[in-house]
Amino acid sequence: MASESHTTTDHDEIRRWVEKNDGRPASVKGTENGGDDAGILRIDFPGGAGSDSLEQISWDEWFEKFDDSGLAFLYQEHKADGSDSTFFKLVNR
Image (cartoon, rainbow, N blue to C red; front, side, top):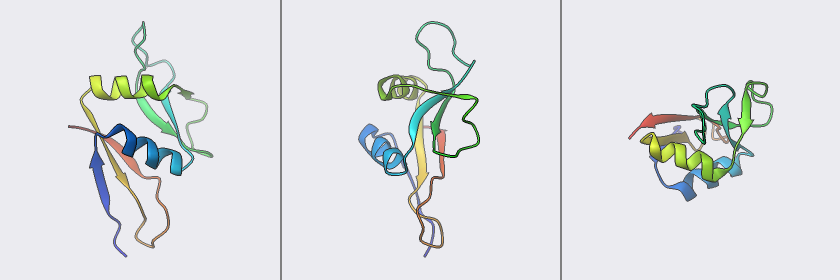
C-alpha cells in the first residue's frame, strides 16, 4: 500500500484529520507577535516531542493565522504499511 498525501485549505477537512488522530491546534510558545497573533502554528499530538514548547489555542485562532499566512495543510492519511499516519506539513498555498 502506497503512502498518499493530500493538500487542502478546507478547515473542516483539516480539523477532521487532526481530531481523528487525537491532535489539538497549537502554537509555539514565545513566537506570538503581540496582540492576537497566534505565532508559529503546530498540531499537538499526544506524546509528541514539543509538549513543553507548545501552547494549545482555539481552532478559530489557528485557522485565522493559517488563512492570514496563506498556508495549506499537507497531510498523510496512512503510512506505507497501511497504519494511520500523523505526518503533516504546513506549506505555502
